[in-house]
Length: 341
Image 1 (tube, rainbow, N blue to C red):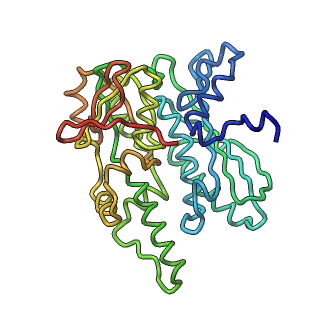
Image 2: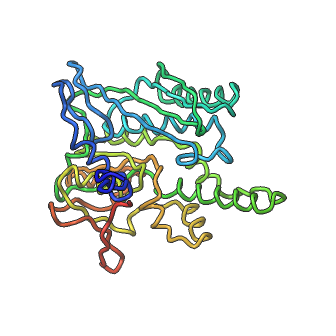
Image 3: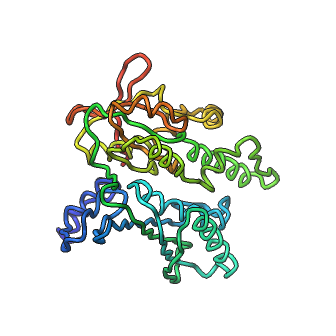
């Protein structure tokens, strides 16, 4: 082994976010039209009349989805949701979509039709055009790459880096449901593998399984905020988990934060499933991922307006730079939020 190989850095040492920082540190932008590159939900390109937003998502079989319990039509639908969520998270409107497929020989044409049908249903619902893409053969199963394009007026762009100390920290919807839906699906899969005579029983888990297999985006929340005259100072979507996405927002804005565990919205079905599996419901809410909700900040003076919107929860506030990122318990104790490796 060469000296260079001996000094090589394992991927696990950096983690996902460390790797992103590592890559972005090696990239120098060449064009004035590139307003924002790596480091936000989408790249921002100056198109003179406004900003064009571009984002890419990659889904790998065995990592992001399991075809044992994921219908292909649902998979196509979810792939679109993942991609356009980044556009909405910058206060933009998604308009076009490009899909790349890596397909192994075990797939039939009709199965690919199901994926595209699902993607088309999502595109139709959210007013997006499936405008192109690419296909290639694969030796390792199914790979889906989705690139979304959208637009936003220059004065209405919302990035991760606009939060200020003392501003309110808010989330849409509820958190942790998608993760618990995944845990129930995995439990039933394991039982079936151990005894093929035991049929999966998903009764009573409709909401959390739906959040995992066929998520939707809370676009109506953005409309309510706009109609109420509430200006967002920063925003991101919750795809990696509240803790991870909040830390990234704080890092971009140069702030700390305090959130309160009693104010984090968790659906009853999520809590019930977590208790069945001996999991603290706060764990999936903080770290589960794939909630596809919005995390955003608003000025403190917007509190009276924001509390009138039933689908939004104020979970804490931003603090000064260097004060750390903490979750506060009912007894006032503080636990630092950390990124997963």
